Image (cartoon, rainbow, N blue to C red; front, side, top):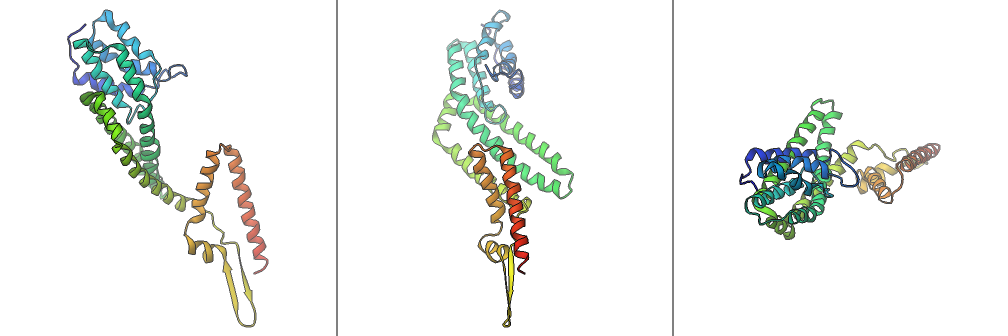
Amino acid sequence: MGDRALRKSDLVKNWMLGYSSETCYNYERLQALGNANAFIPIIRRLYEPEQYAEEISKYFNFFNTEPSYMGTVIHGITAAMEEKRALDGDITADEIVSVRSALMGPLAGIGDVVSQSIVYPILAGVCIQLALAGNYAGPILFEIIYKAIMLTLGYNMYMLGYKQGKSAIISFLKTGVLNQILDLVSIVGLMVVGSMAVNNISYNLSLIGWEVQNEIGSVSFNLQTTVLDALLPGILPLGLVLGVRALLKKRVKPNTIILIMFVLAFVTVGLGALCGAYR
């Protein structure tokens, strides 16, 4: 075995190549081949040429995790284990495979929440509002800030895994602190989604109303302003969002949901026309 320790450049190459984990993606091994490519700099630094094929083969096992935000910690842990294996021989290839397999599931769930349920919707919500206001900086800022967050978090998680090792990551997951942080940030994300629903979904029942006149005077009623806005402004857009979400959770087809929206719109307009006849 080689006696060469990893350099910072090797770690950076491994981290950056990890973002190509989904190249050569297939349903038998998912990210395995792309991940194996990411560890070529590590293998070349630590082992002799005649050992390359044997050492890289451990990365051909099934592997699938979130590769950009939180999943990079697995690559850092793996790099540290490979270094120890090459220098001391205390770690077997099976142990490396076992650690990767044990961590890929939990960190996939956490990483998907961070990237798809927190960072993306919050940032997209803000930048979409800029774009709707005619500000061309909206999409540009989205790409720049999104990539900056991804690279910053991904790099730091990678280095955390490399420096602290698997035991620190496992204990960190067990404490539940990370889940509490995710819950707090998720609340902020839900607030952004709620505000987007009110600002961007135009649906109200202001057409539904009537006016009664007699010798005493007149009394008018409007379902939107008299009832719904008094109860909770924006309740209809929010209700539509929650309704669509409920239908999607029940695996209702998107085309069916669109048809339901059309029917709802026609019924609303029809009720408005009916009420207009009594004004």
